[in-house]
Length: 142
Image 1 (cartoon, one colour):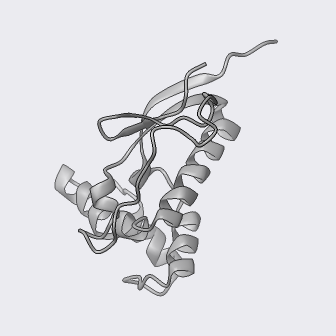
Image 2 (cartoon, rainbow, N blue to C red; image 1 turned 180 degrees about the horizontal axis):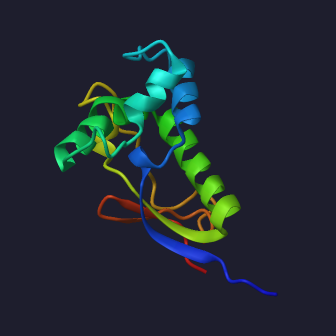
Image 3 (tube, helix red, strand yellow; image 1 turned 90 degrees about the vertical axis):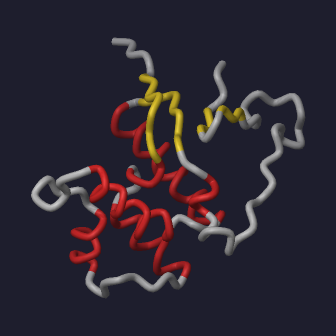
């Protein structure tokens, strides 16, 4: 039976990376975590309905921990790679619109924002192009 790939049009990078990947990124960058134990870290970054009662509680998790861990170019690259792989393997998602704010990923100006060219050096390849709409980076459409 032929199944068409799915399309997910709204995934936030900060909340979509698995805890073990976030733990690995944090340790590979030497980021000082508020906890030393992995399972306490999972509790810290996982949204639990018993402890997260409002939007402010949810945003506190994102802004205080996950976005700081994802602040380097290599961390955001790994996060995007892991999200796309997870979505394709787990749900056969072929097109994804990832959302993130680059200014929240540079430690409030402590890291310079890298220049993102609109086209890849190969110039004609639609697979290498980065399309940007607001804060969303879109995978190329066929």
